[in-house]
Image 1 (cartoon, helix red, strand yellow):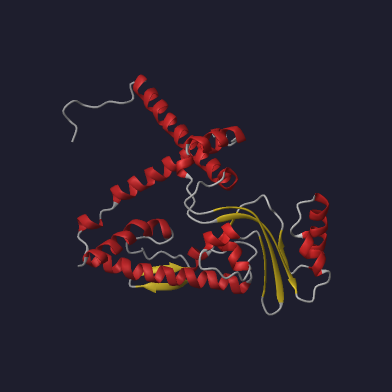
Image 2 (cartoon, rainbow, N blue to C red):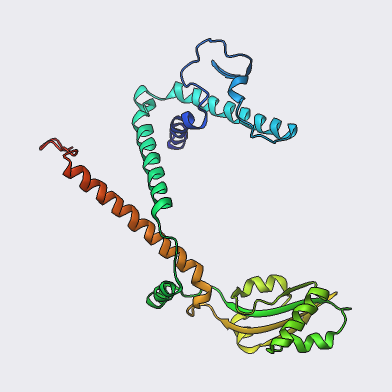
Length: 294
């Protein structure tokens, strides 16, 4: 038997009791459980086993599809399980230790998750984010070009195009307000969040800019006007950072916040483990017989 087949069969043996709790792995006793909806060799799936399979509020069509998918999954798993029973030795089929190890890991994980939910401080201030950024700038090298941008897409027949050409280039607060009003009324698409960093590649998906050197394009263009068969595109590049340079803090803020929270989670769980170990040691609950270590 190949290693791939052995691994597949072992996976079924390990996971089947978890995935299909209603199906006994031993040949089922002939007890009256009602109507049989599927049978594979001597293994039976009863209608009563499907009672809680469908969430409330589902249509008849959705319910039938869920039931059919479950039955098909059960049939495939039981065919493989039957083959495993025939081809593995008793020692290979003894997965009690693996199942217990897996169960123990799940219980520990659930406890750690609940501990984090109850005790983790999720407030990450701007000062802490800024300090982390200053100390780890080498970790924030850009892999892509990013930019601050304002862009507007309008139909070629849109009104007041001359006014739009003035507004999209302006930094005056009043002109920015007028641009927003214009876009809401006439634009096919627009983006006015000039202080938010975007990937240049994402902008290129929206606007038909043709360039063979993205870095050179950013360095040599501020106001860009392009057109296709039906629309005009107006682009104001407010600022940019090219790849391999240091990413700005505003672009990394959420990433840094997640890094800090993950670090806190690790520290919290490590402290919990040390505290519990110390508690068990001080109360004499840990006993290791000398010379009995494996």
